Length: 146
Image (cartoon, rainbow, N blue to C red; front, top):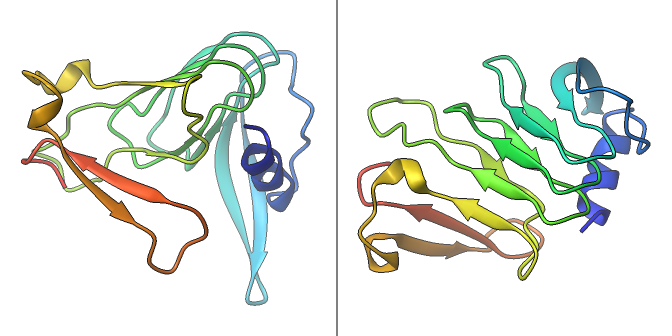
C-alpha cells in the first residue's frame, strides 16, 4: 500500500524515491500557517531493518520487505510496498505510547508482538476506532499497556 506512504512523504516535502542508504533527516510540514521540522528515518528501495530512534517521529520503509521496529518510541511506521513486518515493543511501564502503523496491508504485512509474552490471540483487546479519522483504525493492547 503506497498511497498513504507516498502522500505522507510528499506532505513532509520528502521524495517518494527511496535514498540509496538508510537515512535520518528532517521533513517539514505546514499546518495552520506554522512550519514544523519533523525528524524522520528513510529506508531504501530494498529490504531494510530499521529501529526507530527517540527523535524520529516517522519511519518510512519504501520498497522491499522491511522490518520496522517501534523500539518503544511513539513513531509512526509506514512500510510502503512489499511484505513488511512491524515489531511492536512492550512498554507497559512507560508513559510513552508505542508506535503507530499507518499503512498495514492485510494479507501482506505482519505485526510482531513477541515482546508481549502473549498466550494467544484472546489475550489482546482490539478496539476499532473510526471517530474523526478517514479509514478504519484499531487500538490493540494486551490489557496492561494503553
